[in-house]
Length: 326
Image (tube, rainbow, N blue to C red; front, side):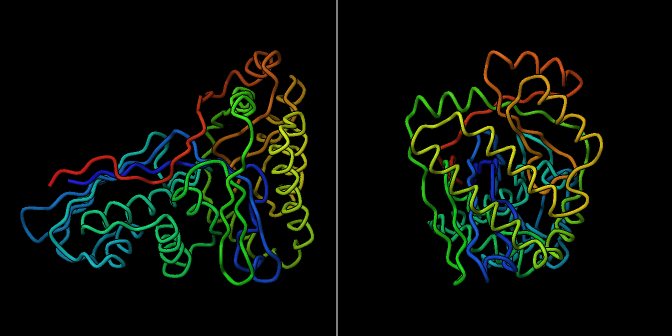
């Protein structure tokens, strides 16, 4: 039996510049962190030649082509496992298909690949896991997504991730004082909106608009560099303002990134003392993140008392194998 643990991620600025349609012309960049919420993949040898896949439903098939779960199916195909295997996954947060904005689908893909390679006795690098996950999600399945989530899940940590015109990706850890990192974690509030969102519809429009929105994306990439510089200089006071600027730009990328209810939550939090925030992921629902000094956080909690708050911490590690039993 093999068990992999892969973190979810939280992206602060630059999202959208990781689409191929953008970074092939202009280098993209994001600032993001992995968090201590995970997807777990268990892989075990089956006693017969069948395949069992367990998630919100259970699939029993005799051929990988019959697997309905497309990410698991293509991961098996890429790694070269065609029979006699049992795969089960669990998540600390929402199911991977519910659009939490925490990069769950890519964490699932990275974690599945990691577990399957380990099952075959193969140790692969974070770069390989991220690249293979991108191949599955973007090239094979044609999902309208970028590639920041796969790299954030595979590498973990707090990073400035740059997407280059030659298809390469630079992962640069952001180095800043531990006390600043602790304070930042304390000043971030995460709330679940309970608004279900299908990221495909949001991202399809966003992808279609990239050519017309290239000037907006360039500004967002610039903000990623500003945020990196602020953190490296331990200027935490700039974080909320940069987050707020990024949200203002992000809303322009597609019509369904936000809605009146999300806007009302956002304004209530700002009025209560938050300095900036954003909807995580593609938008339309999922989780709202705010930067707020500790002395004003109770006011924000009261303003958003009908939303569920979720505590989290930054995760320094990416996808890893946490259990092996031959």
